[in-house]
Image (cartoon, rainbow, N blue to C red; front, side, top):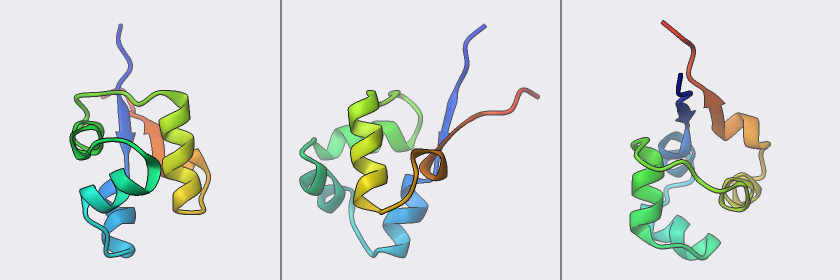
Length: 70
């Protein structure tokens, strides 16, 4: 049974008027990394998840959550 991860990165980027490239540059990853995390094709490392949350000054749980089983 695999668990999937939901994220609100797109929401936080929109609130801060940031592009994927802006966020990627701010935390030291590629734009493609941000893109693949946003669409759920890539689960970020703990370090990347913490950097994203820290950048937006929120907890990791505000950005990422486990998808609820249907």
